[in-house]
Image 1: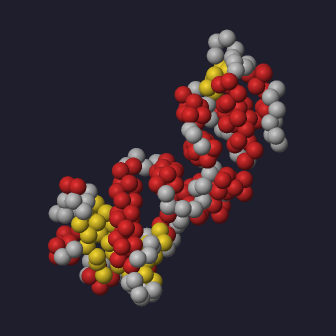
Image 2 (image 1 turned 90 degrees about the vertical axis):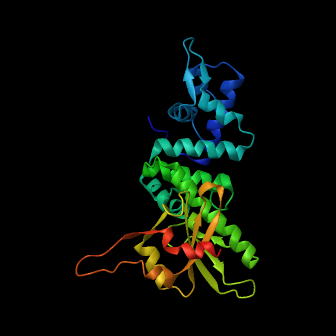
Image 3 (image 1 turned 30 degrees about the vertical axis):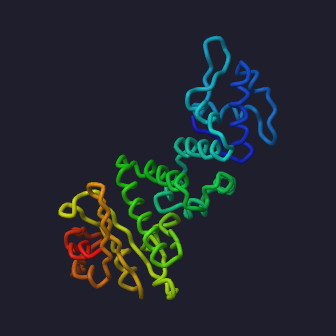
Length: 284
């Protein structure tokens, strides 16, 4: 059973119903007679049941499940709303949710207006706070069926390290474009220096493996973006053994490791060892 399309009134009603179930022992019939603004109690009950937040017990009363109680235990309404959206998206799997793999802006543009409004109200539509990044990364990982959550976290670690590095270097925090979309061909949009405001594109790669074992994967789109950009750099972060080392690689330094298309063949991604840039790590 899938929950119905979630509207703002339905979302808040689901949370209100949980509170009612916790406050008093009501039967399913009694719950369906409750009054909620702009939505039928039947729809609310169906939604919380589909979410697995309530269960009918042997005596006919309805109780919150562990998952439902988790939602209620959250302190803020926005936290409860984020919790609800996470469970809702997992159950619905609407076609537009597939776009989460490409970045949140794609979801916001294609989702029904009601869902986009809820994402804004849950404070997930913009910003770079940890809980926001975690929400979108968790959603993208589930859509991809990606069980290697660590890989996503390592990638975000590299982006955060570059954010801090660039902020210190230029005095201004870069724009973290990778959160919004993968179509840019780079992760951060910084500036050349504290006084030179010329835009600089940065692609971040990060590995927990030793320098001898670490590799990066570069897509053709990333390379074509780099090759056509006036200022573009690769930040390679090696965080093995709790040590953080950075190599800043120019487009020209990377070029010698890029394959060529021949005849009817074309490449889509290339794997390059971090060790190819060992001297740049040593000088950082």
